Length: 118
Ligand code: SF4
Image (tube, rainbow, N blue to C red):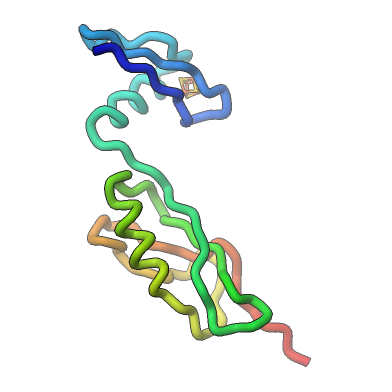
């Protein structure tokens, strides 16, 4: 059965179609073809979210996976992330969870956690 995807590799957002014979059309570059083939085999996403901290002035810190992880693991990853509480100051790109769900991908901070000292 033919399928249609919106390629999210670049902001152009091409509508890429795969017909019953696996002929791919609508992509304006080769990356769209790769994207669609990956989407059909093993869709992956970069997960961006926040984690709790113990700090009143910064109650949540923004994080993301350092690379895309399988889409089917996103819910499980969020369950794990929701249990995390940061208890110390950290720098941008510091690892919050190493090798999340054995994907080989780390969860990292996207903004430093630094408290203003008076
Ligand atoms: S197919 Fe190419 S040009 Fe179109 S959205 Fe994907 S990456 Fe961008």
